[in-house]
Image 1 (cartoon, rainbow, N blue to C red):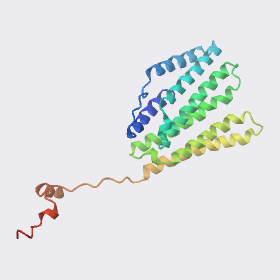
Image 2 (cartoon, rainbow, N blue to C red; image 1 turned 90 degrees about the vertical axis):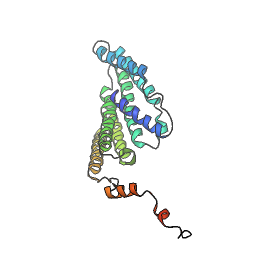
Image 3 (cartoon, one colour; image 1 turned 180 degrees about the horizontal axis):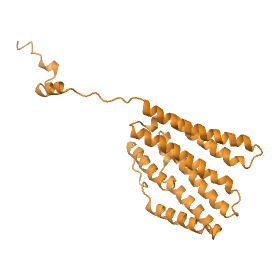
Image 4 (cartoon, helix red, strand yellow; image 1 turned 30 degrees about the vertical axis):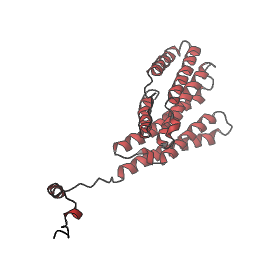
Length: 233
């Protein structure tokens, strides 16, 4: 999610910038990406033997990912809710990395809570949006025109928030039901959007017949100019 999500989001944002007549200079950020590789790999290796250091590295990777996201300037893409939804999924991942690092600095307290920022918030949001986006683009549909993607992403965020809050509340069962419902509705909406896109007939551009083409080539003069001049008749 950390790398593939960014590799998919950056070109899409750059394309939107191009349509606006703006150049996205931070499309590729090799220094930040190298830092992400080093910090996330070191955090994984050190986790069993040096949890506090692993936590610091996870927080560092979350901060680097946050800088990477900010440099994409998604606030300029307000007319593209599909890109904002992908950015929200990446934001959940950033929050999850920082919170996960914080738990390692505190003897893994609240680990069972903050992990849902990644498993539901980030994974759920990015998975549903990628499924819908890739499928629609494959069949020449445009995700930016489908507002249900925003609703779908909203339900996934509700699922993440309520699942994280469940372990801290006296109404755990209600919040768990809300989380499961939000997750299920989000994936059902993703299925509906994909199914509707696959079953909606596409309008193909009209083709010019061969006879019309030959006629236009042999007689390129417009009809209103082919009439004889009454003054010369």
